[in-house]
Image (cartoon, rainbow, N blue to C red; front, side, top):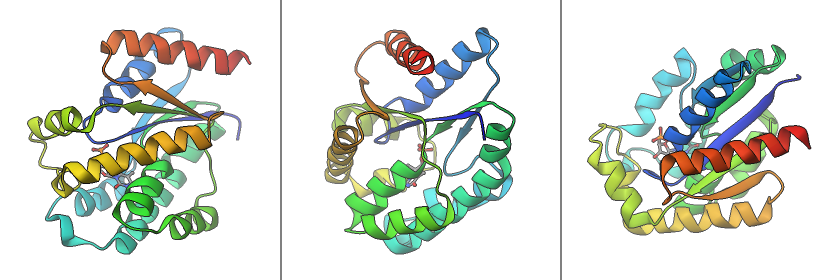
Length: 207
Ligand code: TMP
């Protein structure tokens, strides 16, 4: 595999999807071969699993079942979208990846980091080359997320304290894996954030 996997992470409503799209647009502009994809989803089967995960009541699945479902969706996404893209020397930009499972299911919903990591190691293995964690104050992010009325609010329904735990988890991740993960202040103007991200990407590619 010769391409690169770049992931965007963060709490619900933090603006990471906008930033993933802006990086994709910037790379296209300079004729870089790239794919924009997302999790859960990014392939036909994984999009079907997505519907099960993001709709319905918050207690629809246990954290253990969620880890299995997210990992199943990821495996299909990997087989059908990510790996072919990397083999074709593309930059694959994914709006969420394994860090979300580790933080949402592993750390914030319960104490299951080991299970999430073991399953990842056994069935996915891939680690992103670069990860942007968009940080935002949870109250603001939650309001932005809910104001979209996307009909995919299952995780927002866990409430503000859950979002606070997620934020702490993501910040800790960027400290532990500070070579791969970059913490970005999501409160800035989206264009300004996008420039900062593009600069980090360029430094990474040239380094
Ligand atoms: P999205 O809103 O970024 O499209 O993601 C859908 C929801 O799924 C979001 O609330 C985060 C959650 N999620 C997890 O809980 N674990 C995961 O592994 C992934 C990929 C997403």
